[in-house]
Amino acid sequence: MERSLVLVKPDGVQRGLIGEVIARFERRGLRLVGAKFMQVSLDLAKAHYTEHEGKPFYDGLIAYITSAPVMAMVWEGPNAVAAIRQTVGSTRPMEAAPGTIRHDFALEVGRNLIHASDKPETGVREVALWFKPEELVDWKREVDRWVFEK
Ligand code: DAT
Ligand code: MG
Image (tube, rainbow, N blue to C red; front, side, top):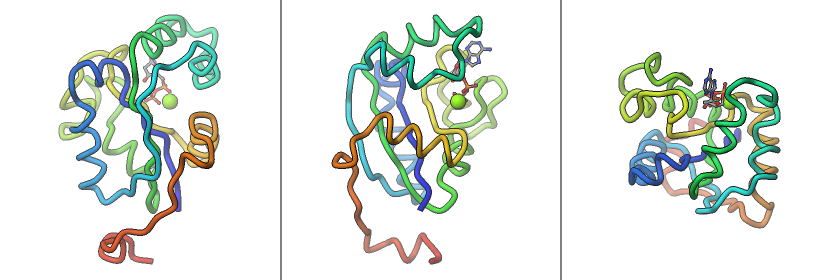
């Protein structure tokens, strides 16, 4: 089963949108396997955003993600990474499709509310970076057979 890291970023937390984000992934049928409310350290922020090091927006991105607490989560399901990116919407909220989280709740790329892994391999890397194995719960839901075909 594919897994994705999802972060409700500091703006989402401050604006009281943690529940809204969780509700959307629950309704989609995805299964929550880990969650923690936390202040992001500078080291974790840098490790998370290594691919963006040196870009003009990098310093602002690190300042933003470390500015206040985030809600970090791991969600799983068939094609979870692509499904979650679809529900999240495009990086730039003005380009995000109506009905997506970034469209419905954001306007600016530097305040786009949420992070989600961009590829299955990234999901594996990011889940390992943010969560210890014992913080993840392997579980089944009664409803799984009505959501997951196999
Ligand atoms: P995503 O978060 O959709 O995976 P990304 O990995 O390309 O997008 O970039 C990470 C974050 O960096 C993104 O959520 C917001 C910020 N960002 C990306 N491109 C930016 C830009 N051109 N100007 C300002 N911030 C940007
Ligand atoms: Mg990304």
